[in-house]
View 1 (cartoon, rainbow, N blue to C red):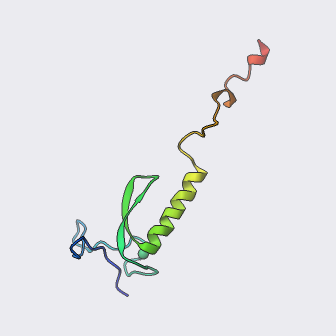
View 2: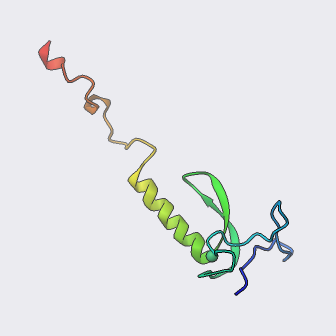
View 3: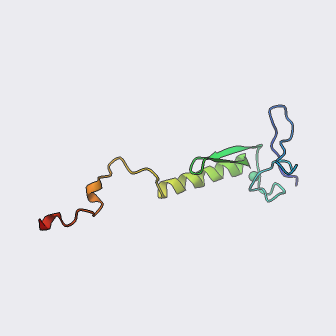
Length: 93
Ligand SMILES: [Zn+2]
């Protein structure tokens, strides 16, 4: 099976800096398990774009969503600094 490769707006194959056609990152070089056209997918947690087919791109976005829910980088809106444990001796005053 030939790897699905990325095409630009004119339908031409997009090549990387090594002259290889840009193909799905998760296609194992031969389009294994791939489905749909290859596009750039921006991962919100890393702000990096990687070429992936529709199927692998959507799967990666789901994984990224789960990662962000598990390790939030923003503090929750109900976060209270006084719960951080840094003033636990106040009762002794
Ligand atoms: Zn793929």
